[in-house]
Image (spheres, one colour):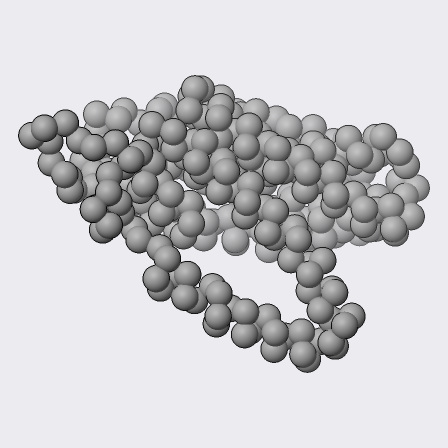
Length: 290
């Protein structure tokens, strides 16, 4: 919801705004386990659950009810904070493609394919991270610590993608994100304790950070904002479904071959195919919005 709302408020620097939003969201997700662990250690899991529930009621729900407005016009403000020229409609209606029309474009399915590949492989690699990196000689502590470079890279990549998407065609950044993800999957076969493990974490985190920011900006650029919630909801339904298959695919590959490495070679083909689709698909014409 946060990225959809930001898309309504910004146009000229939408990519940068969404990059900042994605980076802040990534930081919150990454820090949450640390906070929860401290709560559980201090108060026990029952009290920790209660504290989390109270925090949702006191902070999240009031912010959702009273702190978010879908459109600038709801507060008498304007997109990008710029007052329209004299004679222009102050509260112009939102424009964009309806969901059924967006679903008939190759661009939507190319973006969805990138999201699905990232969700599936990132979830699968993270789920098996201790065992996968353990197979490469890392201790459980070293394998768990690999989440730190992943988080740092995701934050920086989200900010960079936000700036890039304002200047480059979305398909360029989508292709870059998928290429980096394919490299990350393949590099997991070569990891050893030390810098190569850190490099793997940086690649995996950077691909996710790039994709989150560019996806948030690409869909409103391609399809407008009138039906953005429905379009993003459909794309993320595919994303969530794909995430369920990631751990299973890697597990089945390991069981069939006795190692993670062989399965990763095959799975690296998914982001490679998604990158090719993003690169070759026809870009919807903005003139068609409406």
